[in-house]
Image 1 (tube, rainbow, N blue to C red):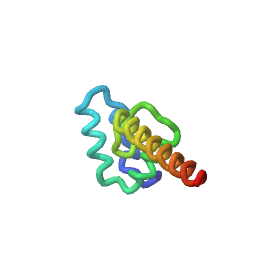
Image 2 (image 1 turned 45 degrees about the vertical axis):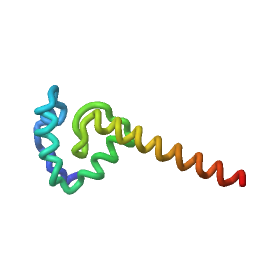
Image 3 (image 1 turned 120 degrees about the horizontal axis):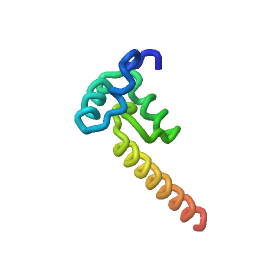
Image 4 (image 1 turned 90 degrees about the vertical axis):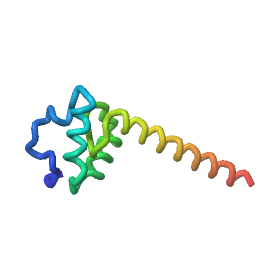
Amino acid sequence: MLDAKCRGAAPAAFFPSDGLGVESAQRVCTTCPVRVECLEYALANRIEHGVWGGASERERRRILRRRRGERDGQQAGVAGASRR
């Protein structure tokens, strides 16, 4: 993540205490070349605080819930298919 737009920025900017701070951090992430990798890192490591890959804490929780639902749905489909 050497090419990250946030590299060298004050860490506090990405750990805001209000919605305006979140939006400011997300603007930095918008054009970042490692945005996807950053987000995936935060999701894989269950990082709960801050803005990572342009996603707030709440947005990352939603992404994880959606992925869990998709994975559970796929597993149910595989289990149902194997019984046929």
